[in-house]
Length: 138
Length: 45
Image 1: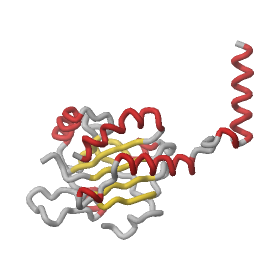
Image 2 (image 1 turned 180 degrees about the vertical axis):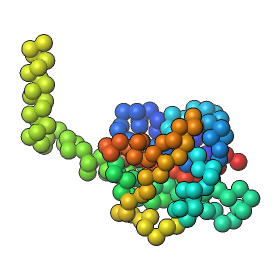
Image 3 (image 1 turned 180 degrees about the horizontal axis):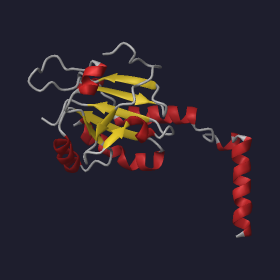
Image 4 (image 1 turned 45 degrees about the vertical axis):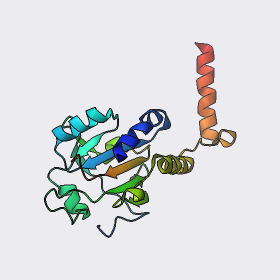
């Protein structure tokens, strides 16, 4: 259900300079069918060998038959610094799309130097002036 | 969970196959420019 809800963000991600990716232990072909069924545009990655699961120590201990991931959501800055961690062991612990919107807004306001159009840095203004001059010539 | 996976720490630049089988690195997705939400879920079943 969580991934189905996340597909609602696909259109916003396309214009919002942010990304979503999902990871499971399912094989590539299972993820491909699942993604197609969802109609998701975000990537779904496969850790069927469970190398990432083992490295991160994220094995779900109560299901030795399937050995799935413990459900966690991580929101990361572009340089992969961890901004927030959601413990999704229970459904209500998982990030909602509204929480992700807030997280992306906060991160974007921190990393986008042109977030505030009334306080643009001089180098950005200068580039805009140069571009305007070029357009005027052409 | 690994002890360095905490808020403010660096998430490892994992590389895994996508639904086409192509290996994708986390840093390929962010391009050093965009934030990302990474969702680990139990699985299809």
